[in-house]
Length: 388
Ligand code: PLP
Image (tube, rainbow, N blue to C red; front, top):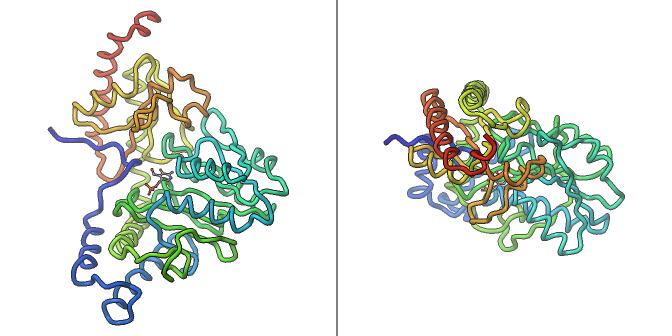
């Protein structure tokens, strides 16, 4: 059976050109970038080339880029780094309720350390109101951290307006761009961004590598101490092959972005329309238009997301649910609850995230399979029988 992958927001396959670019750095070009002989210089040059590619892709300077182990570390670094370095100015941070756990858990940690965190609400479509951000700023505020695009419902936040408010109030602005980078154009100057997190494995690069943009002048402390790598901002022998892979992945993403986002938007809308036409009692979660080109998040009433995922998997289709996390928690997604969904409706949600290798045929197959599965499961659902 052909497997159909529709979970590109979770991770992506590594692009063949990325694998090709990385391979020599495992074998003949294996040097430690901190050494001064030719092997080391070769590794160092490759790292700097990737740094240049990343910097140019967001309109930053090469000195403003630090490589990390991924989106989670970049988020931790940005938030903890700014919080600790600016403690004298204040101890207040503003974020929102639908952030990724990499941001939310970092904020929870800082709360235990004595920081005050404001978790802003979102509207029914998942959008943060910039006016709420403005109102939440106090004399103690040192950082605003609002994501670029949400990983579950794909909504794109008003980053430019929020960045402007931050700048006007002398507060640093961080954005978790893990889901947006490589898919949407980003210019850090134009968008008033001070810190930005990215991850390689969401853009057809390898896992375990990412990066952070830190605008010149942002007061930060480092929390990985040791050698002098990354200009003392993040110690540890560099993941050279990973960084080379990330650079190549960025290069490809920037080239293919305009064409790819058009194709994905068409496929996304076809999937939404097809499901809405074939299945009753379906709700699209997240703003209908202001969302990532490949994101479809739906609540299908009267059935559990998990049952749909397992049944889709039996048909070779890999999607994901926003209703409970993989740890087995029975709590529905904090993102869906923040939109105002009831526990019951949030439990019946499903996320399809489309990418480079999704075809029209895959979309058609997903629509037919899902409608058959929903029919079958609803016949077994006591709630459905009661209502109908
Ligand atoms: N932030 C967002 C919005 C994400 O979607 C993810 C990954 O799912 C992360 C952060 C964490 O990135 P990583 O897996 O590279 O640690």
